[in-house]
Image (cartoon, rainbow, N blue to C red; front, side, top):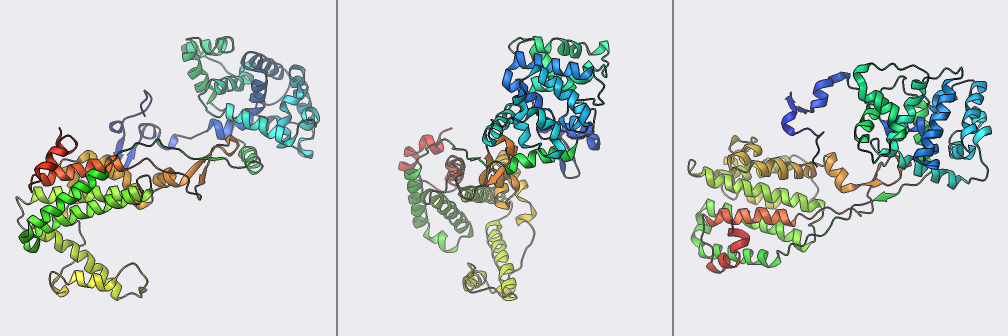
Amino acid sequence: MKGENLSKLSDHKFKKGIIVSPANDSFGDTLKFNSWTKERLPEYLWLGLILNYYGRDKGLKKGESILYHIANINVDITQPKLSMIFSLSKEKQDEIYKIICNFINPSILSPLTILYRGEQHKVFNHYFYDNSQTVEDRISTLRSSVKMFYNHQSNDTTDLRYLSICLPLFKGMVRLSEGVGMTIESIKNYSKTDHEDERMRFYRPSIRSFEVIDMEENDDEFISYFWRELGLCTDCSPLYIDHPEHVYDIQEFFYDTKKVFENITLLNKEKLIEDPKFNVLMGSTCYILKLTGEVINNELKDSILGRLAFRTILEVFIMMKYLIIKEASQDDIFQGYQLYGIGKYKHILLRVRESSIERESHIAVPIVETIVNEPMWEEFVNIDVRFFDQQNIKKKFEEVNEKELYEIYYEYTTNYAHGFWGAIRESSMLICDNPLHKYHTVADFNFYQKLPSVIYDILKILKKHIELLSEVYEFPKWYKVKYKDLVYGK
């Protein structure tokens, strides 16, 4: 996503393990959030219903007339918030409702009577209840109106936000100095200027920035009641993203590559028997290919497991590249890598022996025990609980000149490996297409949501891995010719 108003990563500040956004750094604890949609829209929706019904030109004129007349009667409200109107005496409410009915058809506000009913709102219902409107009619109107004014920066919403500031302006409660000329011009000309007019590019932001200055504390009970009642009387409408299919047919390439490594193994039988480097590189390559095969054959490309497979493939590739680079200064690094892994298995084995692990567990204890004792008796095997080579995975990416792979691909898939909320939100939560539910999220228990395919990215790492091993072992000529552009092309 690109935009003039979006900060870059370099604009953020690193403080005590937290990357702080420029806005949070500037305002700190003084920054208080006040949401147009969740907190202010419920208060001004009665004006929104008028705009929705009459359209922009007529709706703004009627809204201005209503607010001008309210400003000129003796009522103690500073903003046209519905909760403020409801807090007035019955006599004062009566005055306001009569003004409203002088300019609009009362049935326009009838949808709100599904929320504000009973003895507490007797006066409101006396003026605006319309028994010809069904429950479904009223809910449908509220739904379309909330949807219309949901986006805080849309043209329709800016019209409503303009009306919301008219009452304090008409009451003379706001004084603007000459230094805010654009704001004065915006307020004077906004309702008389079409949205297509070039001047509106300056007027709209000016109106929005002025409206956000709320003179009164939120009526949290009123706001909570509004969303709760609408939420409970309407159903969820979950949507899932249907990602376009990008077809990358790697079946033939995958099987040819598998064949090549089988052949390399046969041609290096002596190394297979006694060379830790050969064993580590071939075993790790086989691991990458098995993961790739599982993704392909089990159609996991658009799944959570596909992302976990990709992350593992990426990490194995980085480790192999790291070992090859470090071999020049550490002769026994491949053997050390094997013993490091065996130590990890020994750690599990010792804990298993002190536990009551069930036989049905997927951890096959006899096999783990065999592997731990394979290079030597386990009593001579140490357990290293540090990072291999005492360098974390991020440093390894940087050392092998693959920093971008870490910062984007590895970090992204780590969210999936650890079940962080970003990954859960993307893969397991659907957006509810109901504005009356504030477009909340719904758990995808029917498993509708698929993810973009990982095949392209797996292929990218597989190619890098083959290029890496091409510098260590000779690949057949037919393979180099066949995949000249795919693998070896620059």
